[in-house]
Image (cartoon, rainbow, N blue to C red; front, side, top):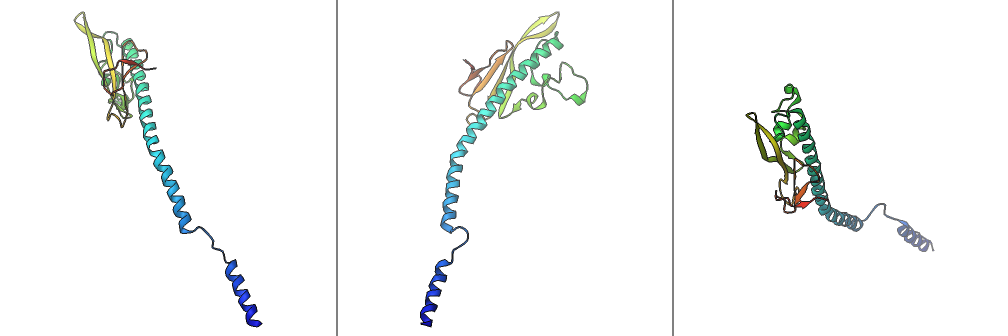
Length: 178
């Protein structure tokens, strides 16, 4: 009888032992679910980055247009600026001038910002009293790598308004941005 009591206690003791924590299988399942969720989120993050770059490019075109209006009113004999460097300039280098008007931030004046390349071109000149005056320009923003940093190219001119875009990422801007 003593031995029978002893066996009963041993069985109860072995059944009441519970493990603390997770099993290896449970941890592997949780890790695989997290991995699947991450793989679903990665393409979305890339699209969000491209969209942010395109939004930044559109806002930068507006900033360049505003700087051009300010440049033309500050230096009426010159008209508009034909380079981004003319709209930029280092404020610590001295007073603003037609060659460095200090109207744009340095990153935009360099021509590279948020995955886009900015240029001013197609400058229309008129000679007045022997001095050239720029009366028109086109500013373009194209992705540094089409499909990666952006999908569309954007253009604007001296008339301002809504920028146009090229769905192929170039400078053939024919579609009105809405």
